Amino acid sequence: MFSMDGKVALVTGGSRGIGRAVCEALAARGAHVVVNYVSDERAATETVERIASGGGRAEPMRFDVGDPDAVEEAVTRLHQRLGRLDVLVNNAGIARDALLLRVRPEDVAATWRINVQGALWCCKAAIRLMIRARRGRVVNVSSVVGETGNVGQSVYAASKAALIGLTKALAREYASRGITVNCVAPGLIETDMTAALPEEAKGAMIAQTPLGRAGKPEEVAAAVLFLASDEAGYVTGQVLRVNGGMYV
Ligand code: NAD
Image (tube, rainbow, N blue to C red; front, side, top):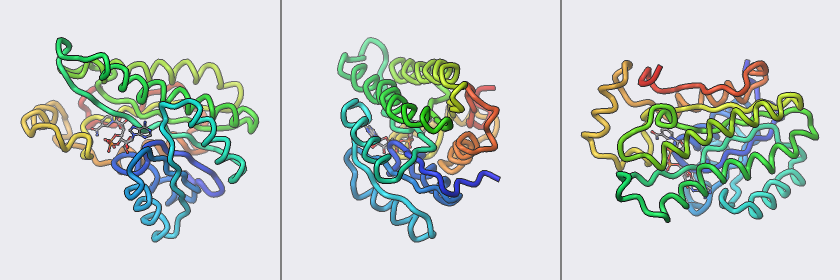
């Protein structure tokens, strides 16, 4: 089950954290993984090397998901060279937390540009190819706060809720072309993004989590792998929550 043999997958922001775990999970099942990164070439190379040392296939690819021309150019290049694109995982994201009265226009612009528009541009470039192939899998990485909201995260939560709307719209738009579009919505996961949170804030989130702990990137990756697989062919427009029961 969940074989990715012969498939090509593009994972945005794949150099570390959840993205890296997703790259490793897809590669372990046989996919050729394109590890997108925007600035940290060293981390992207390390991800590729980790995959190669386990016998998998991967390559790094630099582009900024928020730049529609760069996305189009990169996806076209990828397709010319590898001949197919079966899976797109929109994982790249940023969080600039602040109470509403301290939110700055540049925080809104940056968050929207990467979290929402970035996913949209990548979907546009990838789905164009998937339509021709009459098959494809898109998995967007949203967040529990896109459904619950959270103090200090109005901008981030709104962007993650937007991603759920994007997922549902595209699921309807491209179901007839054999393309499924789904979301995973992680709860608190141990990555660089959450390492910076004060212990008190993390403790409060864990206290609201019935499983009583933070999640691991690999646990999100397993859900992404399922949604990216052939076996998930009858699942589209869904939000798969990987949150330890924090929101049910
Ligand atoms: P992370 O900060 O380690 O990873 C985010 C990745 O996105 C980084 O590799 C970063 O370089 C990349 N990125 C940022 N801007 C980019 C751009 N313009 N183009 C390409 N890549 C770009 O954090 P993470 O925790 O691994 O987060 C991965 C995803 O999971 C994010 O979308 C995040 O919002 C989401 N998420 C995380 C948690 C959590 O608790 N860690 C919870 C819910 C959702």
